[in-house]
Amino acid sequence: MSRIHLLFPPSWTLTTGSTHLALPLLKGFLESRGIPTRTRDLNLEFANRIVPRLAVAALQSACAENSLEGMNEPYFQAEDEMNRIAAGFGGEWNAQLGFIFSRFSHHSSRQVFEALDAESPFSEYFDEQVIPSIQKENPPVIGICLASLYQLIPTFQLCQRLRRAGYEGFIVLGGNTVSRLLREMSIPPVFDLVDGLIPFQGEISLLELYRVLREGGDLADVPGLIWRNGDGMIRQNADHAKFTLDEAATPDYSDLPVGEYWGVNYLNVVSARGCYWGKCSFCAIPYGWGHNGLAGQRSVENTYRDVARLAERHGIHRFKFVDETLSPHFMRAFSELIIDNDLGIEWEGYTRLERDWRDESFVKLVSKAGFRKGWFGLECLPSDNRINLNKNDAADPSRLLELCSAANIKVHFFCMFGYPGTGKDEAESTVEFLLRNRDFIDTVDIFPWAYAKHTRVEGVERIERPDEDWALEYAHASLRADALNSEEIAELASHWEEVIWVEAPRFLHPTYRMVSPWSLK
Image (cartoon, rainbow, N blue to C red; front, side, top):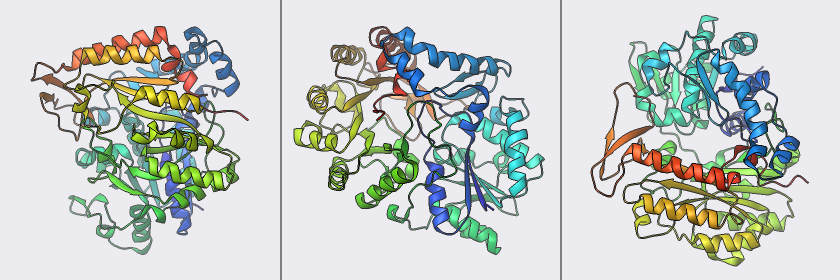
């Protein structure tokens, strides 16, 4: 019987070919320490109740003509059905983001708690499928991973329903959203429903929490735990745990429906937690891994063993590295191990525009090792103004496209318009470059710059609204002539995104992304 239940709540994206990695990582570690652990992907479980899975054959067929109309059909047929259901609860559903109430904002703690008694698409599912199975095993610990703001209301609705159903065990929340909103979530209404918060990495904290509860110890001894003591005071324990990534275990997907996600399925893996650069002036990603921005690097040998074991266990040979950015040093060493051991896999990952991507021998090496797609932060074309982003890379997108095309590596460019010091000229020249090179670029994202929590940007004034205490991004007002305000940036990005939808729909379309870049041998 499982002693810890780990849940991934509904209202997350459905367009990925694998589950979120947090639960398999935690299960692998806890089971390796002798703690029976059960994981459930409630996001996919619930989706399967309301819409059929988007299967590979239908998606491939939809992409065959590379037309907007063809790619729209399967995706929007599913999303329209989800929105039909959402409308009955006063909400909307985006298959890439999640469900959102029209009358409640997940940016506001007050509105999140006002939404607890509202009927939602998940109410019946929680009452009939989730809570009875938890009651049957009655695990002493339930951990819930919050990866997105869209999961906040469903998560707290589930916690309230669990308590009303009589569950008396320890409920602990973790995940990226908790890490980013730790101070704002450390409030009494949260602790009226849950018993603890664990930010950043959760392995040691969950292990010690289980030990303390089993042995009747003191919660003050659980590293990194935020909890409420008997006097009603909310306390944050020091995180004194020493944990290296080579102490982590191979992710354990054994409870999860591997192979049953939308589109071509793969397995998520990770080699480093955080970003080895971590200094881009617009980016708050490093904060999600702790104040240093980088929680460590797993050895290339252990990462290789993880991938080889998972391929053998599940018969899936496609892997997505969810590292914030893969270093060329790691990619080179990992590729050499794959080639030396003749491990037939395909893999993709996020990576920076480092000088190595100008080196033909490096590009050929990673291609030979099965690297199929790189997701690069271009933001905007190299120019004197791009230096404002503090990326400190060696961006040469034309050379990158030349080498990757020759090596059969697909390229995604993340583009971001409107950061102070950049503006309309950079946006226009970047889109012109993208369209001019449409035969060499696989996919693109166009983002409007938004003032992210935990960043500081000169020349603009952040606009904080009192009732949006759980927001992760803010509107802003411009304080300098070369900076656009929030509304101007939104209009700029929207305009160029519309141009791309018309001229090169493959760049943006979720239907295409559910089959690219994988071969189906």
